[in-house]
Length: 250
Image (tube, rainbow, N blue to C red; front, top):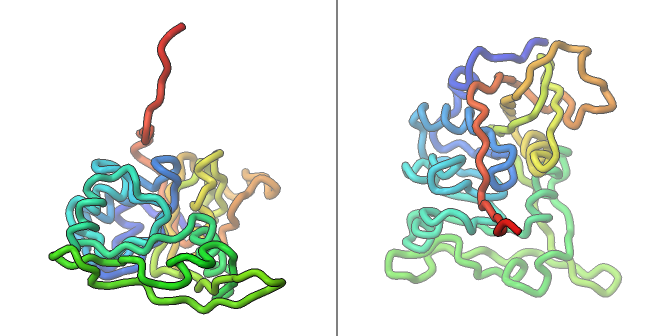
């Protein structure tokens, strides 16, 4: 089955307002920038996004955030986006912060059909006890707080029950893919992209290189095409560095 679409706009054209959306990438590495721009151009809002982070102020998911297209974020790291902090603290954005490993496993579990799992991460903290501010009120008070989670002891240690994540759509980026949706990721772009792809009911992958079926060595495929529904070839291959660190010449 040929899953290639002619453009990013065509690939996300049926994404509705209010959709849940899993977006791959790690920092600014491996983010589906073409697809994010296409969603922005589509004009939909009230998006509830699951992603490790929310880009930066002018790149990645930060583009959607800047124009108030995102109403809720489920993330583990949000430290590089000043507009994110402003919207969260002013009560414009609902935010569920999740331990990074837990977020990865919640996405993987969703893709595997596992409804929930126990993890030690967050035990004895507000992750388990509840009360973390999900949304602030205009006066600075807490309008919505996280609920308490079920806990259980195994081997004398407390574990927290975490529910799996599935989303209406998933947007991911791969270094290489074929027309059947089999994907290969490059280095750090492996972080969260395969997991987000598994969690989406409709998964759209942008690929930097499109090859024909049979050209990918099955042993080198990181994500099989069963998880991917649409493929689009990247048109803009710009890649940014989230935080550039240099040292003085010796």
